[in-house]
Length: 373
Ligand code: IPM
Ligand code: MG
Image (cartoon, rainbow, N blue to C red; front, side, top):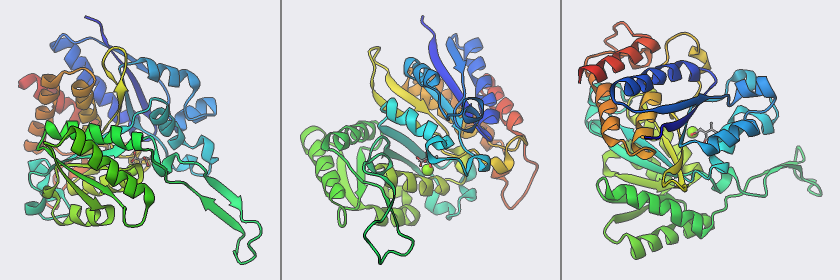
């Protein structure tokens, strides 16, 4: 059997700490399930800037293109706030997404029963929640041209004299391919897709709606499709989130809506994500996995971070890159078991208090639960 190749990019802030716990999980699967991983590690974000003057070197980019999967921790921090835009830590992440053409970003928002009381919404609204946001990740306003900040010449009425420009741009092909990803995923879930845009104010939104409908009518008529304006979608997400199964939306709306959905579940520290591209020659999709949370510089290096989102991101890698669904299920069950046993990192401390475990203890408990299953 050829080893599964994995590039680990821990990044900044709490990234390295949570990644250390994933390493334990990888070791467990190698020792106990006969899987072989060919793991390499490299720099991305602020740490790469410190070492090389760029948030992602060409050499690292090349490695990322060559492996089955990339697992990324988090990037950014206050030390890099004043860097030039072109070398900000986030640019490293965006370059990976763009050059690997990872157009479908899967962001599940699942409410673990043991944590339903941690949501800012009432238990009865979020208990059992299981939705999947499919965010377009390689186009739209994040990458559209023209963009920039320019002198607003010949406009004497503009106090300050400058103009900032970004462009929302989508081709029909870009919309169709992410729509297909959403419909495929819906078929494996509850067979419902809700597409969100702002067709009431944006031409790109009209095109989005028409193309998603086209893919539906021609290729997925068996899946239930609805459309919603993204602002209404935000409202419905906090009002009655369980009405949704799969949500498909563009890059910017997906960024915002997925943060809202994440909070419904009780903790941002719990949520994984997968970014998938087209299948490569070996049949595996280009893929990068990352926790939805950021680098959390305020708690970095203190052993307080919750490693669950990163561990669940690895579970998604098992499922989507290597078709190891059973292993992924086992890992997800181990996480659920540990939570049901009341093991909590600091971010999961409710009003009743208790003693939080450290990042590393949480990792150990999850590995122990894997062994006990
Ligand atoms: C995300 C993040 C990124 C984004 C940032 C860090 C560039 O917010 O993955 O949701 O805006 O896409
Ligand atoms: Mg975001």
